[in-house]
Length: 271
Image 1 (cartoon, rainbow, N blue to C red):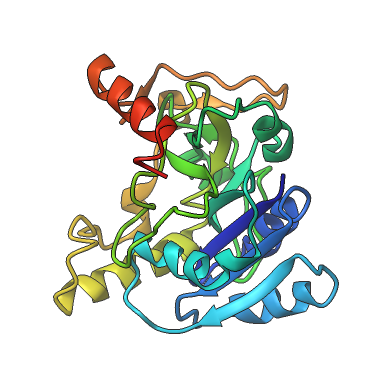
Image 2 (tube, helix red, strand yellow; image 1 turned 180 degrees about the vertical axis):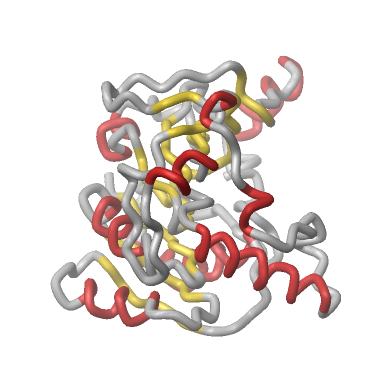
């Protein structure tokens, strides 16, 4: 069993080194796709690649961001895969709590898909008062210690099969497979410092102004609008215990639909 990651990045120079080094501990190859960074992100990726053979600076271009860009690295490199290997969608601001290699080794063969449970860490009003966030400083997770009590889930890992097709324009492969009931946990550091949040908002608003529809919700103008209060969040105590009130987007197929999918995969109708 091998794990291949497709990592989509843009302007992540504060966190990309930490994220890639963490993933390099469990991924056999990480194909890094830079979506037009204007900071030092791509420079850092290339530096890390010189000392880590499994970090591959795969492509850099300026296409409009969409989640379906993850599929480009898969389509270009799937020939290296064998039955039983796994692929993972790897955003640069996600760091795993559970070790994926250990987690996936326990997934029975009848399952093809693993979803993540995301604990979303937030920059708070109190963080800004307590710590010094200087532009250009690397990300320090000791400053971002509070996460939302409600988590959410999305597809992150899927088993490779020779007949599996990942069409252009689609977020995940077609007939991706049967979902494993257990979820793998990760920390999501979407908002890390005032300067990082402001850059993120400015880029997304700029795209919306050009007619881009993917970030229609990007209406906030100031990083201050993204701040939360610690009282509304849960503190990471560093004990490995993460608490969640409920999981958003945790939809399940009806028993009948699930049965049909299982039969279709076992009969080879689906890959």
